[in-house]
Image (cartoon, rainbow, N blue to C red; front, top):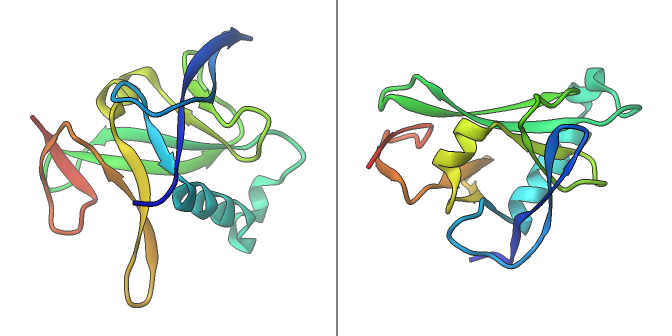
Length: 142
């Protein structure tokens, strides 16, 4: 497995939970170095230039109802975190934001990258997932 960047130690600022890099454990959301590099590459991609870099940019990870297994991971860029979000990589662009409900379902998960013949994509290795669809985009809970 790739080197891990683990996030968890929280502090409060401006109504948002902020996090610092710490050792991995089962109560945290963990990012591999490859996943962090993939998010940075997506941020730097020319197609995302409309977001701009003059202000903070957040890569949002959320879990939504949908997909063939009932729940799906949603990745998007935004300029504004939501009150209550846990913010990862404070001081580094792009930050990663996760809402409290999604984070409760993601604790113990690893965000990683899978490389195929012609592409690479972010994947969530979630120990709480009971089943997943064949493409890996949706899942159901234990």
